[in-house]
Amino acid sequence: MPRNERPIGIFDSGIGGLTVAVAIRRALPGERLLYFGDTAHFPYGEKSAEAIKHYAIRIANFLLDRSCKAVVIACNTASAHATSEVDLTAGERVPVFNVIDPIAEHVARHWKGRRVGVIGTKGTIGSRIYVRAIGRLAPSVKVRSLATPLLAPMIEEGFYKNAISRAVIRGYLEHRNLAGIEALVLGCTHYPLIRKEVEEVAGEKVAVLDPPTIVARHIEQQLTGLGLLHEADAPAGPDHFFLSDVSESFAKSAGRFFRHKLRVEELRLWEER
Image (cartoon, rainbow, N blue to C red; front, side, top):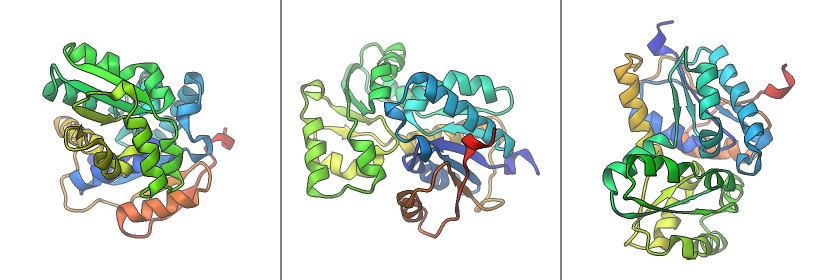
């Protein structure tokens, strides 16, 4: 099979990475996708950095074994803690993308001298990865971050677009850490699923950024430059979705995202070796 017809490998701890997968599908309709949701270890935001590195390396090897032409770490926490390890594992064979660097570059380019908030899991916010990445590119940006640990589990269970979810979102956005922000980074790939609710609570004065679209455009540019883009109106084969543990909420969400029934397979990756 020509290299450009191979699938793009994407992984996350659950359904959040589907927001990135859908954005890639919209931007690159000719690409095949191979998605691995590590639902057995969800949420990554509560795991140690060493555990996340272990999971990410194992999944990256799985994606390489499946002849993926690129690896996308579609999880902010894994991007924060395991990008270097995944790059060491896979980087000599395929390009490795994370979901933090493209956002940092976007903020540095468009929000110099402004106040930008970041919300995410405890693991992502605690790592200070956004503060460092944005500060390195644009020191004038004032980054204000807040851990919002209730959001990802709420979204994973499909419990949003209701009065309780809006109350939780409001409680976080009214925190003093985010006072006076002009833009907000959704620093977890689950969070775009509640973007409309976040926008309603944040108000018109706060621009809520769209990370999946930003990441997808970055991947498109990089694959084009590397000669790996499959320029066609449809993929060369079917997409594949794997879970490390059966998740009914994942199957339902995946179907909603892609607007057709998807074949989701359980793969107990941790029991294979």
